[in-house]
Length: 428
Image (tube, rainbow, N blue to C red; front, side):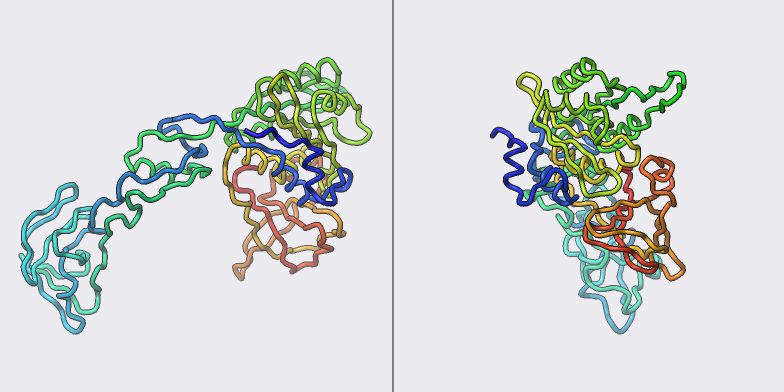
């Protein structure tokens, strides 16, 4: 594996890089250069693969289905014998059950009663659903014009053909993908190791749950929102609690985190004017850049690597305000961690919705406003804000079902204008 690029190397490759005036798109480009995926694999049973990332292409060892079969209960017949102008009569000469081939012979204008999933008898290519035909003892009558040749038949390999790719490396294993692997008879599969992410909050004013309230102090919510977002993403989480703004404590926490984690996330201590112990320790132990991003909420952010022995861990120093933490995680950290996981994840789709209100906005920064998306009487998606957009109003993230994304060059939005909405898909 080649040595990772330094932050200076990356900055030189990106035209117009200014750590004090970064656009959101510039941050995304920078992080895509910074992150190197985990390259350790595990072979796990199918029942343990949900949300894991495939490390190897899966080539289908068999065809699915392995034979032509019936898509429903009915009567298998030759489609060419159906009349387009008058009812056609067939004689029933046997029954084909699922799980065993029917081996009889079928003559002209004869049919076989067949069950869903049963192998199509030789020479027959069409299934007449039992509810469409008239049964008279050992004969059926098929009305004119209700069937075409080939109807209600599943073809060999129409889902997957033997020797063809079934799932690509970098795919996330959804419930459907797990079922597909099982349909191929594969008891286990090779996936990338889950990335280990260490997280801690910083600050003397932060209380852990169980501590008594005190003047000027607040309970730590960031630790729990980040933990939830990491859990939904599928990371292995190392919870390091709250670290006081003390040089020795911070150094010990960073060293411990870097020794065991692939990435470190902190909240607090990276804003201008804050006590600089956190920033000083980041600089001492690693290659770290401190950014002022042209965005709202979440302007300050630190990014880089922390070194411990022969190991290094990615570092994401997030702001301290709760909403800013969640927005910067959704916009930047989550895509970076997906890359770390080896997940070839598509970009989060944006929903177009009509704004129900005026949204004040000046060009020159990206804004993420908490929104509630609904459908109006005309069936169109519409969106309104949750009200107060302060970066400390965590209740607004509870109310919201998406983030209204107002782009870097975008200006004020009027009622009725279409806007982009990053709909929460479970990660927030």
